[in-house]
Image (cartoon, rainbow, N blue to C red; front, side, top):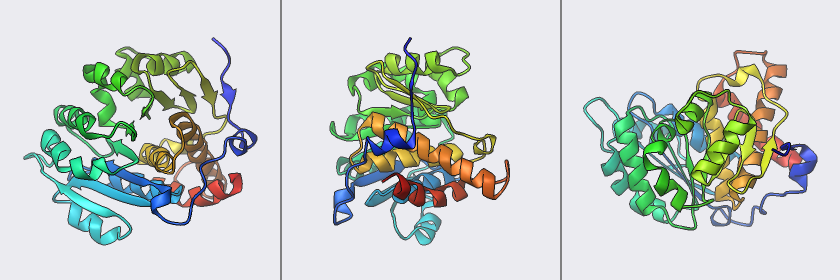
Length: 287
């Protein structure tokens, strides 16, 4: 297998993001769906990251009982409450139906942050696959990844308009076996699902290309960090980045944010929300 291309500032400057344009519409519409009653923060972190990397318009959908508080504290986003199960999870099929109009106008859709019920997550993913426009990019994270093996053919049908953002455990569930992960595992997942995958600083697409981000820090292994990565990717995709470009840029931004916080705060102890605040300056420096 060829060595992955190393993602450097020089590579990214030679692979520039689409220009921001003059209005929020020109920077695209991102939608983030997830957020059970007990874990609404994943949707919030993902949405904040999407805006911080330049998405122009943002809509969030999460459990109905948590939606009013999120709407009150996140005035930059439109917020939709979703029907809940008795345990406070998002009711999957009903959520997909409720989000259909929102998703129909989206450029990029992230599903998964903050979900906590595997069966309902599968129903949500299946329903969203029915309503996401063909030209929109679908990003799947967290619990939405754990069910993909059951809907593999549906994901493959979308071709390269899907990006997966698994951690090590989620990558193992995607492959239905134990894994490290190493480059071979990430490439295998990309080939199996015919999409782009970013995991542990490695990126691969379904066409056999691969990249490595030579950054990252142990402090990134903190609650909500993966939501920031997934939100960064969906925000870049909303701006018009290609799936591979959005994955490479998003992975680099996330890793560099961790490097900077490790220097300023300490090797561990910085928070996922602090990663979000680092993103605009890094994007600007690379632009």
